[in-house]
Amino acid sequence: MKLVDELYNLYKHKLTGDEEDIDMLAFAFLEEMTREDLLHIIQELNEQELNDLMGLYLIESLKGKFAREDYSQQRSPVFSQRNLH
Image (cartoon, rainbow, N blue to C red; front, side, top):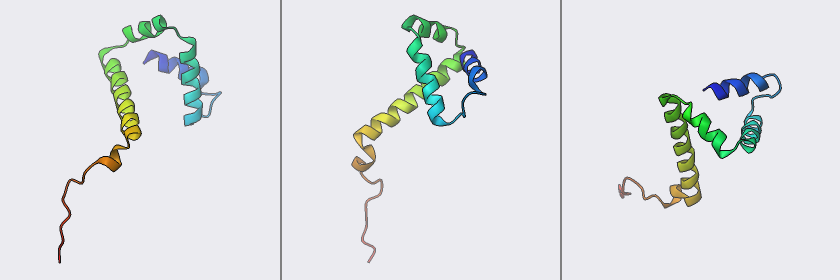
C-alpha cells in the first residue's frame, strides 16, 4: 500500500518500530484525516489491498468481540468427558 510505504519511509529513522510507536503513528495519522480523505485512500486501493484491509479489520474486530464476550469460558467442550475407570 502506497500510504504504508510513505509513512514507513518518513518515520523509519525516527521511531523504534515497536508496537507502541506504530500505534501512536497510526492514531496520529488517523486523527488528521477526514472521512473524505480516508474514502479517497480506500478508493485508490487495488483489490488485494482492499481484501487485506477488510480481512485485518474483520480479524481484529472479531478477536475483540470474542474477548469482550469471554467466549473461551462459555464454550462447551468438543468432547464429552468420560469416566475411564
